[in-house]
Amino acid sequence: MGEQDGVTIQLLTGEAIWPDRINSRWPGAQFVARVRIDAGAASLPAAFGSVPPAAIWGVAVELPNGGGIGVPVSATTDRGESLQVLFDPDELLAGDPERVVMAARYWELPWRYVGALREAVASIGIEILDEEPRDDAVTTGS
Image (cartoon, rainbow, N blue to C red; front, side, top):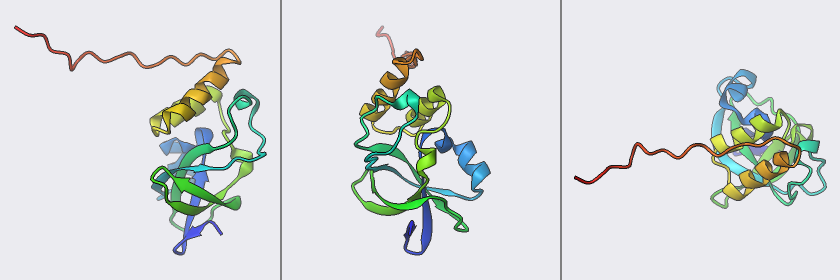
C-alpha cells in the first residue's frame, strides 16, 4: 500500500514537486527517485491534454511519519527499479502549467517528457524558452 520496506512513499507530479512545496507539505520528506507511472485513462488537466498519456513522470519521496494520500500504484524509477507508491490522481500534473514544466526541468525528468509538456503548453499559447546558453566555459586561445 504505497509502502516499500515499511516506509510510505508518495509520488508527486506537476507543481507539487517543487522542493519548497514538498517541505511545507511533508516536513522531513526525503527524495527517493524520479519515477514514472502508467497514466492509463487518467484525466489530464486541459493544459496537458496533448501529452501522450502512456507514462507520467514525477518524484517519489519518503514520508517520515506516513500520512501519504491517494491510491497505491506501481512505479518504475529512472534506473528501472520497481516501487509501490501512493498517488493522488486528482493531483496529476496539477498547478500553473508554466511552473509544472519548470519543475519537471528542475528535477531533470526525461527530456522527451519535458519536451512533451512544453509542446502541450505551447499549444495553449504559453511559450517556455530554453535557458540561454552559457559561455563562461568558453576560453579563447592566445
